[in-house]
Amino acid sequence: MAQQGSVKDLENRCGVDPLVRIFRELIAYDTTSDPESKAVPSTLGQLRLGAYLAAQCSAMGYEVNTTPEGLVVVRVAASAGREQALGLCLLAHLDTSPDAKGSGIVPLLLKDYQGGGIELGTGRLIDEQICPQLEEHRGDDFIITDGTTLLGADDKAGVAILLQLLHELKLKNLEHGPLTVVFTVDEEIGLSSQYVDVESLGCAFGVTLDGGELGTLDVATFNAQEAEISIEGRSIHTGSAYKKMVNASLMAARLIDLLPPGELPEQTQGKEGFYHVLRISSCCEKATVRMLLRDFTQEGLQRRQKLLYELGELLNRQCGYQAVRISIKDQYRNFAEVLKEQPQILEFCRKAYAQAGVTVKEEWVRGGTDGSNLSFRGLPCPNLFTGALNCHGVYECLSLKTFSKAFEVVCNLVELIAKESA
Ligand SMILES: [Zn+2]
Figure 1 (cartoon, rainbow, N blue to C red):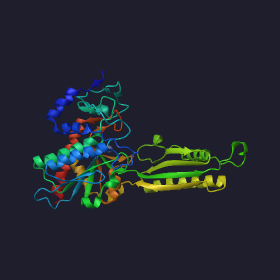
Figure 2 (cartoon, rainbow, N blue to C red):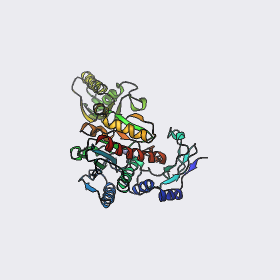
Figure 3 (cartoon, rainbow, N blue to C red):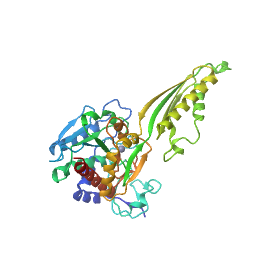
Figure 4 (cartoon, helix red, strand yellow):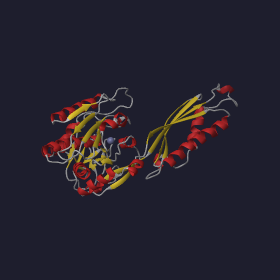
């Protein structure tokens, strides 16, 4: 029999677990970001949650700034005697993915998971197919949804950990160097890192709290580019098209067909890169193809780029004029290059995991994180786990064992840096 969650159990847990209580407060805010919006941040809900966090942090006595883009920046002075320690920046994002509904979330607590499926309210089931590591969580407690919305653990689990850290710094005697906590906006639509003013942070390194399973430490991301391929056809009435018409739609199809077989997202894994056809719009006269290029190495990315140009040239030769034009822009880069040169933050992270009894699983993210851009702008920034699983949809859930371990790891990291770098 599949297990179910309960509102009452969550209520009781909130009474004894401040981290869970904070998390529940945060997910009451609808902060879905909107890729179509021209506003900054893209949705009002993010400003509302930001205002709530800013008020909380000010009430605790911290120096808080809200930037014009809606980022909330909290400065924490070092504890006595640790003023010389290296500055650490901790980041989490306020928005949730536009891929699923993020308002009216009904969180439920599933206590003592005993294996098998987890039933959501709508008859949907979290099973091994949705969550391959599920069986490893026997004995764990989960926060789940009623199956109609996402949960928002991505990344309110990260936000909750940071808010609780700020509380603990006031309540307990946790030694720390200078810290800057940044709550970012619009991460899910790829804009957040550009709003972060790395220089003004004055930090030696950072971490994002935006990962998943227990022990994962994201140490590499893709190198990413987006190509826009414009194809100019020659439209002529079909009745008199013989040997005159050049159909841009068909040229677009041909170009896509010439991509190396097997190098698509659905056919690649691990450290393999790919081409991803994102969007095609076309008629006989004109076609536009937007394509994502992804690779863990710069050479691999350049190889993909080169092939695309070659295919364009091939089609141009075939039609006898310059029909195909390709423009390629950089999106983000693999931060492993930066971490290789400045490995100090990774070493601190590994120690912080070990102190919490957590085995480190270093991961290559088949995507980007805020750290991808921040690292190249002077803030080496790996990504830590939070316990959020099956993100961006109604199957999203939060492993509470992992969540509390993530909090422990962050506290360890703060203390380690204070003691070992001062
Ligand atoms: Zn996230």
